[in-house]
Amino acid sequence: DVKVTQSSRYLVKRTGEKVFLECVQDMDHENMFWYRQDPGLGLRLIYFSYDVKMKEKGDIPEGYSVSREKKERFSLILESASTNQTSMYLCASSFSLLQGASTDTQYFGPGTRLTVL
Amino acid sequence: AQSVTQLGSHVSVSEGALVLLRCNYSSSVPPYLFWYVQYPNQGLQLLLKYTSAATLVKGINGFEAEFKKSETSFHLTKPSAHMSDAAEYFCAVSNTGTASKLTFGTGTRLQVTL
Image (cartoon, rainbow over all chains, first blue to last red; front, top):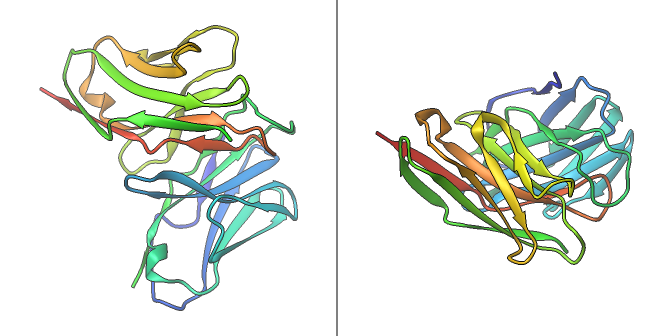
């Protein structure tokens, strides 16, 4: 079974702090994704990575950055946390190397609920 | 760009009743469509996906969905709801860009009552 793990289930930080959210997958997947989930808005893509050291902005990248130094690990960084970044953060991974629309399944971690005070 | 719309943010059914969760898509190319489920305090897991092989797709836990091109719909159904089906359900469409990106709907929370 594919396993995607996230470093924390719950995290409380203060405004202005630098925050690291870590995600690790154990299936040698090429693609990794970071989403935030907010009530009534569904999942929105922040950043994704299709290879080591490769990244692309998603739909809502402002205020975030990412790092992928190793294939299995994808980190989301909040350079200076703000209260509007209080949310559930979900990491996912998928195998496909194909460009374009895909039938590839994304596998999700359990999520990190981040509160910024 | 591809998108999906889920009608009804909350749906409540009695145990044993039919479950119908609605999803309509917008796509300029033949779409690949997905239903994911999120149980409380968990991540998302795949229920089923449409890959153009068959218009009626069967998934886990007795769920199925039918792709109807004429109606641009991919509604999720289950003949008889169980208490354990209470969760949030997301419809998604695969994007035509890089790396199998998905665009998700806003979700429908299913409540099952006795």
